[in-house]
Amino acid sequence: MIKLGTSIYNAIKRSRPILKDGSSCINPGQKLSLSNPYLLEVLPENELKSFSWIEGKKLSTVSRILDRADSAKVLKRYNALCAKYKVTGFNDAELQGLYKKAFAGGKVPKDPNLDAFVFLNNLDTKIASKFDAHGITKISVPDQLKQLNKILTRGIDKDKKFYTAPLAVECPAGAGAGLGTAGGHATRDGSFILVSGKSKMLAEDGIETVIVNDAYYKIIDDLKQKFPQVKFIRADKAADYFNKM
Image (tube, rainbow, N blue to C red; front, side):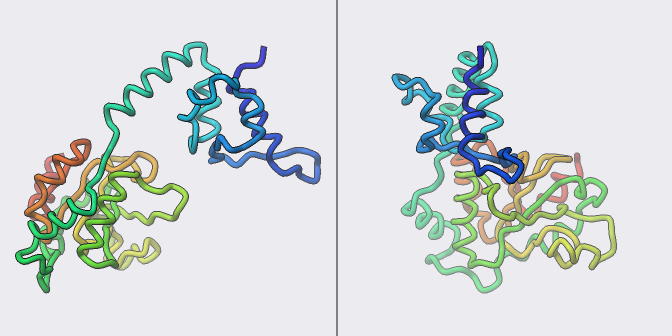
């Protein structure tokens, strides 16, 4: 008896273009859509609503789960975790409130985000080189908060190029030109630096820590409350935090 996960995989395979040798190929990151008629052919018609969770999910992951004998239990745990850790970011009105709290009179200071330049030089490079990082920069300071809110709410978009570099490096300055960073490390002139777990990668494993630069020190407690799954560290405290690891 063909299992449901395998049936879904074969259905999507039929929907792919036929190659010259008569075969069809599936992209490794192939995602599912309930609007695909080939997919609808193999799903139980009276249970379509219960399969809404597969929308946008990777075909390989869904197939693997649904082929398991205990798939019902796996999905129950999955739905419970989604409900528990569902992330809701700041809305527009809340963001405006954060700007007022961060900046006196709502006006961004002329020289924000200087602390990371100074204090991150005290990072132990042997430790910091094991952390993947991405500095949010090249947009206005207010837009940097919007971008952080978007990433922490929706996650890193794996369909777009996401540039990262070590939090610090053990090589001479300039060696990281190929990474798009002047000193080989993640950029430090923005309001936030996203950091992975130790020996992990941001795009694959997610964000564990956010270094908050001096522009937004006043709203760190608000960030912690809204995104409790992430650690928020002041830039002037970041070197001590990572060096203790």
